[in-house]
Length: 112
Length: 113
Image 1 (tube, each protein chain N blue to C red):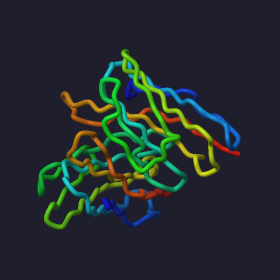
Image 2: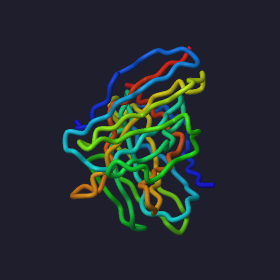
Image 3: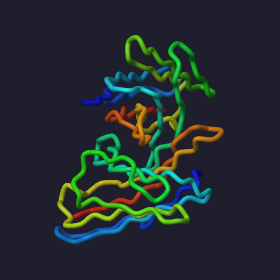
Image 4: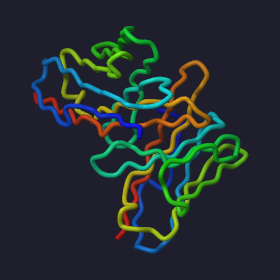
């Protein structure tokens, strides 16, 4: 059965710290891995990764995929209170339907 | 702003009732997916519609059904509601064009008492 596991489940840090969130997966017919940020309701898109070893960056956020280890990390540097959210990792399977398999999420809390 | 809208924002039902949730996209994408997100969990895939036909389904019973209309708006229907159906229901459009990304609507919070 397809599985996506995120760690840690919860993380509390101080503003200015750097955090690393982890995602590992066991999914057949892998197509891509996506990261989303969920603050109140709608998950908002952060990154899509398809190729191993290529880092994607957006401001203080960056992510990289390791297809050999079946894992990905999301880094956030110089954290701000506005980074507090649930971060979701999802894997897209190849197939007739564009199905995303999500992990349970990491709840990140940034204290001032 | 993703351009995906959902209604209602939240609603409360009792066990055994039926509910219809709605989703629409400003840009008229022809693929819509529905997800259920229970409290403290990641979203779970319910099903996907492409050009008005269901083309994929997750592990949800038949009392979860859907429709997609010619204008690509969509409905999720749940019959015989159970307490465990209480969750945030999200719909998403997949933009296979420039961004190749799945965009989510704000969700409908369903509470079953």
